[in-house]
Every structure is written in C-alpha cells, then in structure tokens.
Length: 550
Image (cartoon, rainbow, N blue to C red; front, side, top):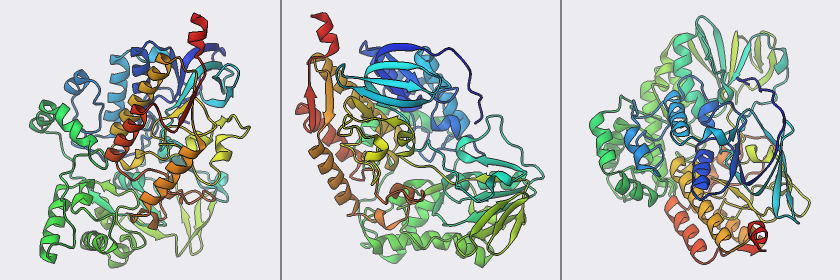
C-alpha cells in the first residue's frame, strides 16, 4: 500500500457510535453525530480522509458527475466558499475538498487513521458492539455505522505467475501516492472499465509503448471537460437550495435535463439530432436523451448503435474500432463511462489493443505476460481490474451476527438488506449506501446525505424513546430484496454481466445489488417508514443511557 502503517499503542475505549471509514459518508456522519451530542470515533485504514478519492490516484482519475453537483449540500457555507477549477473535477481537487471539509469542521481529532477493523461482535447482554482492529484496539459502542464505500475493495485477479514478474505492478484502486512516471516504459494495462478508460490516454502520452488487454469493451461518452466558468458556478450558487431539492427528486440525484419521451416516438432524423446534441455537450447525461433507454430494448438499441457509430468514426483502424464497439450489453446497463479522448488514443502508433476473449491471458511471466497467442514484454503492468463492489469492503471484516453466523456467510448467495441500511440479525449496525440502496446508480453525495440523515434521525428517535436496540425484521428484509429484484427486472440492467451483478468476481453470485427504483422513490419510502415509527424494524429495551440515568 502507498502508506506504511504507523505503530502506536493499542487502545480500549467506549463510544456511543463507531464509524468505519473516513470517506465522504464517514465525515458527514461524524459531523451529524457530534451535532446531536453523541460520542463517536471513526476508524480509517488510510492515512487521510477521502475514501475512494484517497486511494484512487491513478493518472486521469476524475469524477463523472459535474463538480457543482458532486459536493455536500448540508452546509450553505461550504457550498458558497469552495471553488471548483473544472467542470468535472480531477481526483486531486476532490481530495483537497475532502481535506478542506475535515479541517473546516475539525473532524480529524475523532478519526483513527492507519487502522483496519478486523472483527466486530454484538454483545446481547449490553446491547452494544465490540470492535477490534488490526493494531489490537478494542472499542465498545452502542451502534456501529459502516461507511466503507461501494468501490473500495480493489480486485487483483489471481493470475498464474503474478509474483514472478520482475517489473513494476500497479492497481488503479491503490495507486502510489507519489505518482508514477511511465516515460520511456513499455506498459501493459489489463482492463477497459471506467478507471482504465480514464488512465489509458494519460499513460499513452508518457509510455514508449502501451498495450491494452481488453475482455469487454465499454460504452463511453466524451466528458467535454473544461475550466469551470465562474458564471456557471454562480448560477448554481445563487439557487443551490432549489437545485439540490430538484436533484433529490430525480431517479439518480443528478440534474440532467431529461427528455420525457420515448426514443421511438420521434423520427430517425430527430432522434439522431438529439443524440448528436447530447454527444456534443458530453457526460453521462447522454442517457437522458430519452425516457425509455433503460427500459426498452428497441429504444436502447438506437442509442447503442449511435455510440458504436461514433467509435467507428473516431478509431481509424476498422478492426480496432469493432473490438472497441460494445455489442454484448445494452448501453447504460454497465456503468457508462466518461472520457477525455479515450477512443482517439487508439489512433496513436504506440498504443495496441489485444482482445483477451479470443486470446486469454494464461500467465504473468518474469518479463511480461503470455496469452494463448503471444508473449509480451513489459517494464510495468497496470491492473485496472476494478473492485469487489458494494459488498467486498463489508465482507472483508469478520462481522458476527446474533445467530452465530457472519455477514459474509449471510451474503453467500448475494447481499440481503432492508433498504440497504440494516440487516436482519445484525442489530444496531447501519450501512451508508449499502447494497439494496440507490448508491452507485446515483450521485453518491445525494445518496450519502440521504442515508446519513436517515440514520442520524433514527438514532435521535431511539434516544428520545429510550430504545437500546433496533434490528431489521426478517420479513421486511425478504420483502425489500424481492422488491429490488422485481424493480430491476423491469429494466435492461440484468442483461449485462456487470459489477452491479457481481459478475466481475469469480464465484460471486449474480444478483443485482443496487436499488434501481430511483433516488426519489427510495427517499419517499425511507421517509414513510420513519414517519410510521420505523416499520419493518424491531425496537426493544431501555437504552443503557436511560438505565444509567435511573
């Protein structure tokens, strides 16, 4: 890892709440708990705040949501004082923002860095969690909040001979903090997902030679990134409250000027005109061209073929263009990517594309790698192989339930939650943007604030009603899982072998993990459940705080 773990004496302490993770979710959760007078400690594996933006420092790393929307909404002061330099922010600027928030709110004094949680157990008698870390710390808390992030468990395939390679290896999700200079190097990069699509154009400009190993091509839309004009920023800042409220009432928490009519309801000429307009403006709002692109295969085909046509126009070599043109999944059903001259990069003489479906990688060798058809020599190999998304960071911790099993065992056939916020048999354990919530299908800041606000309000309710324990019922969990499957099956999403389905991890069950019903529908359902006294949850016992007061 980029940072060495700092040795320190182990500690034992009691808190009201333990928060695991110091990304944007953990920071906001700590701020909310402090405001209500609860004691809390954040445990973070990294040496700094920022979560995914702390670890993902690969070349070209950039957000695919516009800067003016990818930020906290809870503080008007933060909204007004922070200045974004670009329309789509680069990783260093997002990390600066996370550090600014941590400093502005004085959050660091309650964060334990360079520490990983190894085991958690719920004490039935005391109605509290015992949390143990890799450094021997033992913390007890009435509640535990998992702010571990959806894309934080980097996946490195178990290639034969990996340890034999004599060059340098890197993973986009755990990039060296000092950066990497590929000048003059022969580089191989494995993967063509979102991180690779961002990294490849930058690495290609440095490397003497870059070979891309692609299993599955992905749809990507040009970002049209540019310096952020102050007039545009001012439009947002003058109406932030109104615009944020509008975003929370959309499907994905992003204002994208959607067209509320079918792709099939207009002439082919008008349809092409609209696609051209969206392509020219750039960004993932391309999928808002029409209202049925994720529901209707025929409509989706028109968008997919338009983008394939653009790839064929941009990439000069017809064979390479066809390899880069996705044909095995509807557009948008895998995370649609946003790029800066990605397809143009394949016109460079120092960039080569290898199709590993026809020529699979058989092993890593001391000098490079071997496919079924050829040997390649490299000075460095980059693994852009993604993450064990949504569940990996949670199942990596030995979280014990009240029935004797673990969360990993419970999720062996796929994650099961109620609202993505809690699990049956895991009392007093909340998850921020867990599986079963909109999370990765939304603007993460919108979903983070939704979940943190709901959790905080729930904790206030429990305190005010002298309740020690809250737990999702099995019936509520089962019904929510079934509802999530039903909603997903009304869309085209299950047709793709995506990381949304766990398809990028060998042996992981194929289950659509995020909730696709929409940020707006999810927000209303969560509010309804809270207003009705937390239906679907079992609330029991006088709180330890109340008992002590008596």
